[in-house]
Image (cartoon, rainbow, N blue to C red):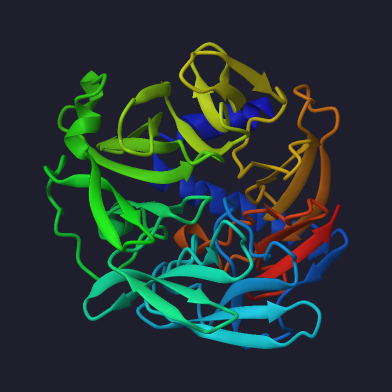
Length: 416
């Protein structure tokens, strides 16, 4: 494990070479090992329909309604040819009692990693959904009441939605698409292309009740905050906004690129754009989640102890290393009762990805258990890969994830 980890870290400096070597190793392993499809008590949440692709999106939200009767997902024909296709995707609501499928509408702005941000809207999480779309030449978001059928179009798309359902935070999806394919939208060209540090806003606040949009932070606000020498002449972007459970603060990854080198720091900010705090700034921060209103769990680099999972206390430099034997990235989140953590890992050298859970108070990793393991076909790779993105059900008894082990993208569930 340590040798593979060291080689992988070295090859991160040379992405093209790393990609080629990785493909050769995986092809060799898959061709020599017995055929493998899946392992675990895995059930499908989507219809048995190999003619379509079904998926939900990211790991920071749940497809289940609060009462767990309904499941949301996207349906489309092709998720392997393009990261953000210019074709509509259907928005489905599946009744878990009757298996009835309702088409809530379509979206024209979506990507293979995060979909169209389709999600249940708080505070009840069972009567309204919100999602992004592209209409009349602009990005927008739509709130739909699944009981009355009422729809309301808002003036901007959403990235992170408050738990109260009163506001959302958003960013420039076209710039994000150009700098991180698979996470933004391709409907409009990036009008900041060629500009390393745009002069305009990088994060906005959208009032969901009054349909009002206001700038929250500029790129220059971030680059002037505790600046580093590597920021000079670098291209900057923001990504992965997540709002705290009490809606008072949010985290955001501030990233900048210099040549092939990528730098990331994790900032926390109040939801009115004030009180910025540099929580983690050792060069690499990846996937994060809020444990509660004061603590954040993340896969990141620490200069003193290396890459791994860490639990950090907001607005302090206090942190604790979790699971020292795990040095691979994944998508973590805490169960609704806070007692467990679910996370995943990307396909290994045999193209096998896994969903794992652990007790939240077990920082040594003794309780880690694999609950699902699935094969990842070569058809879905690189930017059009299918990350598992595990998500808890509201009652914490089930975990759902996206996967392609049956030869097409689908939505699956395992009981805990």
